[in-house]
Amino acid sequence: MEVFFLFLILKVLLLFWVTPLRVRHRLQKNGFGGPSPRFPLGNIEEMKKKQEGVTPLEFADSIISHDIHSNVFPYFARWQKAHGKVFVYWLGTEPFLYVADPEFLKRMSTGVLGKSWGKPNVFKHDRQPMFGKGLVMVEGDEWVRHRHVITPAFSPANLKVMADLMMEPATKMLDKWTLMVNSGNPEIDFEREITTTAGEIIARTSFGLSNQNGREVFEKLRDMQITLFNSNRYVGVPFSKFMSPKQTLKAKKLGEEIDELLLSIISARKESILSGSPPQRDLLGLLLEGSLSDGRKGKSLTTKELVDECKTFFFGGHETTALALTWTLLLLALHPDWQEQLREEIQEVVGDKTLDYPMLSALRKMGWVMNEALRLYSPAPNAQRQAREDIRVDDLVIPNGTNMWIDVVAMHHDPALWGEDVNEFRPERFKDDINGGCKHKMGFLPFGFGGRMCVGRNLTTMEYKVVLTLILTRFSFSLSPAYRHSPSILLSLRPRHGLPLIIHPL
Ligand code: HEM
Ligand SMILES: *[C@@H]1O[C@H](CO)[C@@H](O)[C@H](O)[C@H]1NC(C)=O
Ligand SMILES: *[C@@H]1O[C@H](CO)[C@@H](O)[C@H](O)[C@H]1NC(C)=O
Image 1 (cartoon, rainbow, N blue to C red):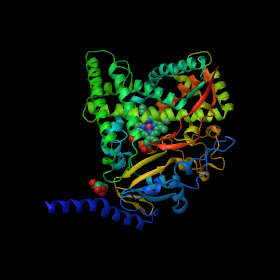
Image 2: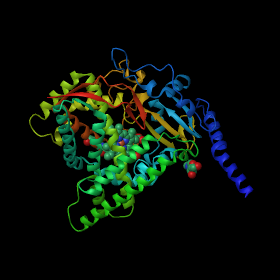
Image 3: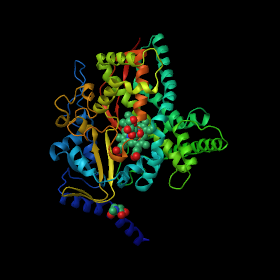
Image 4: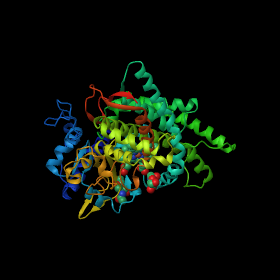
């Protein structure tokens, strides 16, 4: 017995202390600097510390600053000053290579295929209830198969059909606003409103909401989102999972219930397809159709995998889109001239006709505004990778197993890449350049990079344009005096106190 415990202790020490030390040595030998870690929390203590000397984002005369990096990532901003744009820090006993230099990113990623990258094991564990083995998480040949089956579901022909699924939830939201204004309350929390609506839109476009099971899945997915958000766990610290057992349990239970409901939706769908009914034109329908018509092994997804993809679309797709719209409405509230310009464009392109798919690409200025909002307030503040082999960057080696944290917020706010007006809202920088005049083509990464770039980006662009068009045609809006500018990281980049707006029907 004692021998067993001794063995266990040795094993734990080896895993969480000796191995990380060895890795640290290797990284140092390769010339990667960074803040000194302390066992067992690594640099987490310093990251959690209240930060001093951070510039405020809001001034007395209610001028709002978009210079957010040192505010949302004070520790990265500080470490950048001391160690440059590429360095190593530690989450618990896991080393992370921090990258805020697009040229390094380019060199690091050329020659590494999408399938050769991993996603950090530490996060995978943490987000298991949300993404399961969905596309966001799978690696290697598995990822190739998933991506191969999923990509065609997002083809323009399919997106066109999904555009119609978006109108109804958005219109419902706007009708509610009209009622609110009529009853004397012109103030809405836009973030909350749009997150609910975007959740409903993604549920409709992913697995349908037309029956009771669909509704229930949607409610439970939202519940799970809230449960996971409220838990403030120490990612990467050994055994941290046991530090919030209640949430962990609740998420697990919700996860099982969701799986069961989705399984029943999928088997019902399968039966109805096999009995000759036309499949539903949502993502699940398209994936099922592909799976059933091309049932060769290695070309389709299993039922369990389909369940995980539905969850992945929900968690990967609704909050990000809602936040893109939220930050856009903040920016448009601060720049009423751009509200007007977009309304004029809508008038030209849509006029009195009903909005349809081909019109969306003609909304060019709206496209610039979207890019500029994604630049200044990138809902996905970072991209992550884990090396699954030694990766050579010039004469440096990134050891197999090293996690990578690509600081998208830092790159989007770097004056060396964008010029002195980097923190100004200037959508026209995207007029003739899809990279917005960034000096490096990997400096603008709202949807990630390489083969693992966001598969939903065209769906999101469509949703963004549909919803924003409907809003701008019916309402103008300004910032409520209650707004407090405090962008913060809770997985995504969110306004900590929501986005209260005063709306005026047009
Ligand atoms: C504004 C909205 C969105 C943003 C900012 C966003 C951002 C991202 C980012 C940064 C990644 C990681 C890319 C990388 O690691 O290089 C990603 C991956 C992914 N996104 Fe999105 N996304 C958005 C909307 C959506 C939507 C609507 C869906 C689905 C319906 C979706 C599904 C996915 C999936 C499945 C992946 C994993 C792709 C892979 O690993 O092959 N996303 N997204
Ligand atoms: C990288 O490390 C993992 C885990 O230690 C190991 O299983 C894998 O074989 C390594 N890959 C290469 C290419 O050495
Ligand atoms: C999105 O649309 C563009 C242009 O239509 C296309 O080139 C691209 O492959 C699409 N991306 C995805 C992920 O479907």
